[in-house]
Length: 446
Image (cartoon, rainbow, N blue to C red):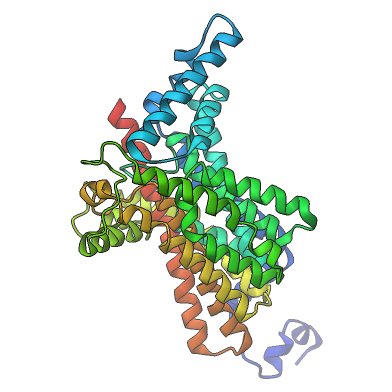
């Protein structure tokens, strides 16, 4: 062989080695790029999924109580600032009196919040953008709670993907884009208080956490139902009884007030919040409310009322828009090899189960919702279920990743791929559902 011929021969071929697979080479190059740019990819994909999850909220019109509540600032406006303040006080007093007398409910925080929101954000565009940002804050706080409990920041992107698979707009009473965001506010306050107790130092953090929790209780009283679980979670993390029991005091006070008010309702016949403990009716209503938090429940629940009609092209587009980034994000997390402990994953799952399964109790024992709750829908506390199920999904996916990373095997790799695919596809389908409902709401008022 001439020297010129020798120079043109691949050394590997000359030695009898098989040629490299070009597809495998490209895959390795892509994985190497993801590893080199992991931080940027994780940050960008996480932010994108969070933003697009809440984006449909910003496109919907005024719905439910917002149709009238957004008019309150113009109705109470007076010639002077003092006249306006007196107008707000009058409406506040009348509203609180009606709810206390006829519904047995105590949530002055909700009324004050509603007044403030529609005063500060008087236009539909500003209001909807604010509500979308409030929902975004809920996503961020949920992910931070998961990260703090697991002591690993890589759980944040996993939690955001999980939230993308659960947080969806509803065709009936929707907690995400309506009711001035009071339900989302209560979630943010509760999660913020939890973070302060988990990570704060000194008595000021405890005092602020108690204040936030108290306002959450007076905004939406369903917070009462899972207080004991949060106390246990705080104790497990900090081993501090002062922090673990901090939430019990405002809960006991507000809980006692609510119990007294419910027992003194003046017009119990047909009242939505009269307590009815017939076992079968409670069970049926509880199942309807709890299952409404599950992804796509508006479609698959038996007897679902007017389920959204999915556009297959929209769903396919969402697979590209959110599904592929979610898949890349989960791949990056696995390749980063997060170090997680089984006890921490159990605690995240325990908290998630409580946030999902405890709030439906108040709906289930209420006579009005036993009569009126539509199949496939859920009352506004369904938003707590979104958060709870997302924490459960975060714990489950992280457990699959840990099993695979600790002792790799083909079976465990397949389980992790299947679990990832389920989350990715649910993200795409859930977003398509939210877009469909938001678009339908706009068409309905057009």
